[in-house]
Amino acid sequence: MRIPPAAPGDLPALQDIERAAGEPFRGLGMPDVADDEPPALDVLERHRRAGRCWVAAEAPDDRPVAYLIAEPVDGALHVEQVSVHPRAARRGVGRALLAHAAGHARERGLTALTLTTFADVPWNAPYYARLGFRTLDGPGLTPGLRRIRAEEAAHGLDRWPRVCMRAEVAHMGGTATGLPG
Image 1: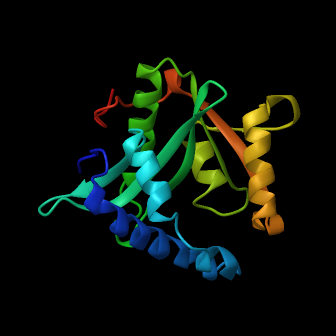
Image 2: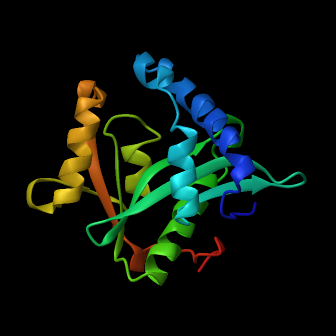
């Protein structure tokens, strides 16, 4: 498994990964999440050009099976999206992408990874907690995280409980090469 920066030609495949990764939400009674459109190509391209869009690619063809996009928010690297195609699930692909993002953050002097996620979906908040993320509330929510949560609420995501989470990059494995650190 390699974790290179996304190439321009990868972006449509990332949309396909997002659609496939959304399907399991349907079985949890969250059809709106399953049907949500993936990030637009221009959004993915903006992250790619900024150097904050990575793919997990499998041999032999190096076709992406997962991706992560992020942006700096209030001194942390905020994980906007991490999606793994169901055919690559439960093999450590998401963990590897997060470790890669932690290495990227560390190299840039950012102290943590943050993300927002569904509180009660097994492959969301409980999964991130196992990786060392902790739930933030009240004073732990930075202005940028409050803005992100407000945007999510406006998008209708608050129909299901959501949380903000944070992991200090000093405690996360990995380097920006995606290899264990």
